[in-house]
Image (cartoon, rainbow, N blue to C red; front, side, top):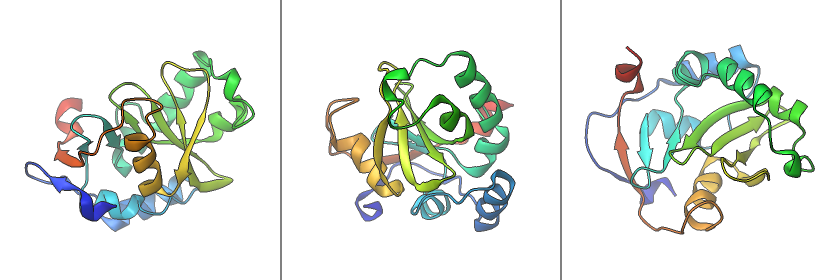
Length: 166
């Protein structure tokens, strides 16, 4: 799947494998397959024109919408009760956000099976299983037609969120 991606722009803002290991250690989880390759090969940016953002380790730990802030917001504004057969509120509050869409849908993993990527949609009360592993989740977001119209474009545009955080 990653071979189909076309990098549009420079510079790439890559994560180091040591950053991924450190984040896994701090969070007590393993990221899904493909995550390490994605953040060390493509880095931070948007995929699918301006649709999908996979968070690098520094953002998950310390950046905008970091895991602590995200959990606080989810606890306060929980509305996914229709999806409780997939994940309960308590399970979501144990989860780690690994990305989002620019539409406001959020990609998360739960420590009990960090290979499985779930989506908390912004405009639906369901919780979706996007797939096992990051490539499957990305493909689901692009091709399922559930949260947005299907699209084939796989352009990746790098950016550095830390410039916006400053």
